[in-house]
Length: 324
Image 1: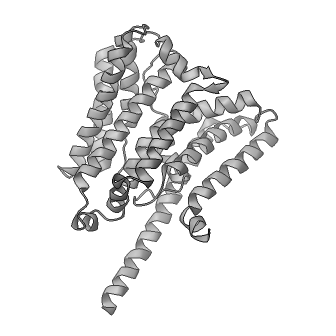
Image 2: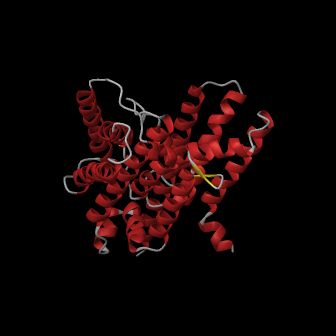
Image 3: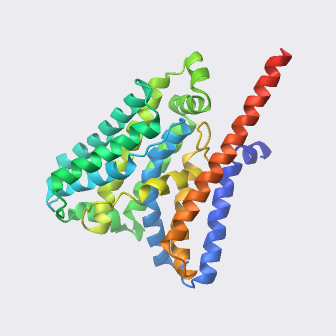
């Protein structure tokens, strides 16, 4: 039991923080814990959680994906344009859009793993390129309404449970199995801890890195389609809010921004925390700018703590080397 608590301490702290925030928000905003409001909170958290799923894999592997906003935005706009509000084209449009997200992730991964481009530079460049391409394609004009099937997946319910919550649950189970039970998960943690050591240990570091970015591109594209169903239409800039939220959710969930530690179960709590915070701000008469301060503080603190831990590990290794 003690070993379990020690191993999952940060994840448990994230869930404890989520519960505490729920209580505090309920005190300032009576009715926040009502069934209807909690359903809305879970729906909004699901969008963050789905985008942050891919970001979790990338960060655990020691990278970061800054192309998330316009992968999401591109997927939303392309789906809306190709479907033109009709459901039938989704049969081929949905796989096409998901494949497009995966392809962008593949390009990011190859740039990082094969050509040695720093993840920040590679993914930021991809984000800017996608933004320019979408502006050229659309000319800034509005896109058609979302197909009704996508709207159902985003805001519909089955037995009172939001459909998107069920989708998020299924993705959480898949992510948990990949990280906890599959060889890919072991390779990913080894890669994030030390790419050099992992490579000498026989871990396929390049393939693992590429796969994390493919997953990130795919989940960002999926979130883009679903978010279109929630808003009713795709619009320019709809993915911008999900850059820092996806990173902050991973950090709040206990992952090290420097890689090598973390789990998607923690990210789920992080997504909920950020969404609850969004509901708490109006109750405290604070603007959305306060939330950006929280994002920045979380990222800064987690990177600082990760740097200290890394420095301590390096010092320990140096002392061990001298003794031998």
